[in-house]
Image 1 (cartoon, each protein chain N blue to C red):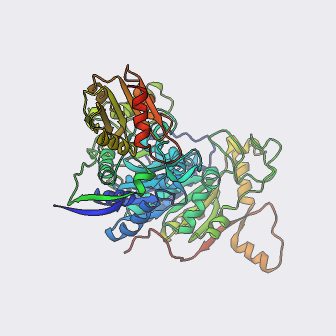
Image 2: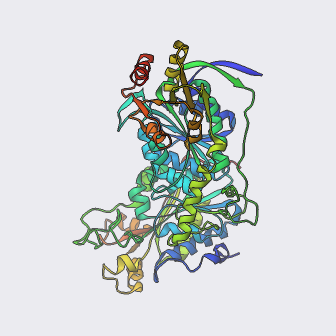
Image 3: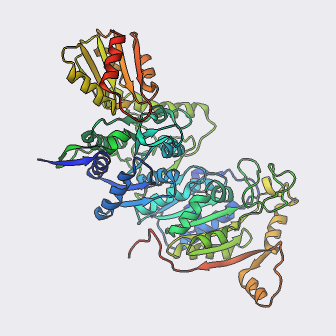
Length: 366
Length: 263
């Protein structure tokens, strides 16, 4: 049984979080993500959860990490300027393997940029924005239904892999209203608990340690310093640091096939679009309007870690066309994996690509 | 149990320099926690970055050693998400009043139910002795080589003005008073702030004519002015010597507080 709603993307995101069992939201108002905080402020207290508006995005990120160590599913939502402020504690979450969900409803940057306009300019920041080497997971919704479903998925991935997970939405998807089907319940993957008597940062074969929730008498010390399997600072041991950081990266990168989320459409085509987020919609329109053309499409929902294996499905591709609302951030990632030309179709300014712009690119590179 | 039972014995020796005042503060805090009858599994210590913030790593409870200045924001998340957990924050003058200043005043404003113990050594110890927001005028540090030219914060006045329910100041000399003050802080619902002036022989004393650790502790003793005495002096219209600082219980009130567990 499902029910139908007509919701804004940001509402769908907040409802997805509630369905996933999010019980703590720490946030700070910022356009175009604010409706998520407002929805959580209205709904969470009635469900026994906690909403708190923090003094800035640094504190918002800190609060959801602290809350996560009590075992709660926690989330914040922001946009570019706030995302920049969160980078410090995002690195802390990666280093301490703290599950949490960060929604970035992207707007035009750099700096204050275009608060009410759409962009995808934070895709590389999502992957590499904090200092040092680490890995994260990033999901990109392209419609209101996916705002709901990928938010649920973000919580499950965060708990499964003990990592911050980003829902990299954009103003277009956050503010548009669409029909959405709401399931009665959603699937849940819980954190693997720390087995009493085992070390709190000793990973299992999957490279993920059990989670020693605060308040369970396991006396877990959590630090952003390089730490050993006991969780104790060990910041001048070169081998230990290398092994720790390599594991933090490998636990995500090695699982890229397990968590991959994409659609391969018309794999025998010679002209292939690759898109995530709002530009997916323009590609769909082009394919709908040009059924006579030989067009393939790789539609990616989980962008980081990048699903490079999917590219191999398009064996006859002569060109990959990558429309993005940035200057080609993911196009460069694709170039690393393929031998045929990658045609970046950048668009800045806050408006979606038009179908005509994509057709024009196909004409230039037949 | 005694305060010693709260230590992680397998973490010793600690990183603190010989003569450091932080150990005294940690002992007093743990003694107060112990007197409260709190259980290790229900108690969480949170800290930021700096010498003081290494304290939770030596305590046998769940503990969160976070980013510079952000301890109060992390602690807010822990406390609100699980009000069954009792949360104590260790911080220092640089961590709390410089990079963490905004989180400090907002935690006070929210009057969130935390107890915060600030080891104020008036300098950045861990990075080797740079001036902090509480370095007194004229004092030498590696970034104030000609004497600090900026007025320092009065952290207790700041906490009071921002809304904390309980505020007191002591020094590393006043161990019994400090222990009682921390206990009063732990007992008081809402935000409790205990500032402790501590000697830092390595980074502060060395540069500021405290050749011996005891010289600095003696300075802290002789320059402490009890708040009750200060009040008497003010009543009589006497002038408060400029080189004295007020110690004692400075604020105790019962404003609405956040995160207080309902009985």
